[in-house]
Length: 172
Image (cartoon, rainbow, N blue to C red; front, side):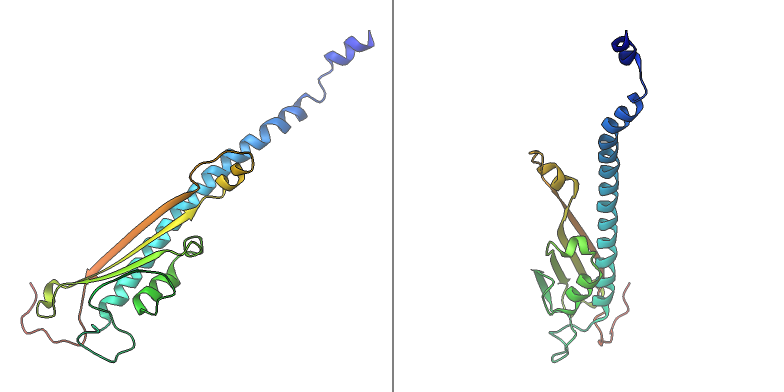
């Protein structure tokens, strides 16, 4: 009769259920958290290239003003890494989030248009890097293999001010 009473006793049932459900619940919460951090990293990357293009838009053109340590090289600079001495690349890299810079992103600076056509000159900064998800690293411990990175590609462009050049014709 005692064995029958022990089988009907359900005092530890809730504890066992919580022990079984908690890892699944934490994994589901971690996926949402990790995805949110990836979106936040993409947002910070967009802000970084936007600020870099603003700074690059007021730097002089290296082909027009020679000898200036802070100038924008005409044409395409990149893709280069954050170790480049280009001031626009350095501005972008100092503002990029750590989760992106630890994977050594590519930064591209493009200055389009000619010196004679100041009204149509544009500067573009592009950042391309990989964001590493944390959950996939944990899943690799149990043998699951998936792509553990998300490629973040953000760019911004602005009209190049071409300092210190005076405009002979007003831009329309």
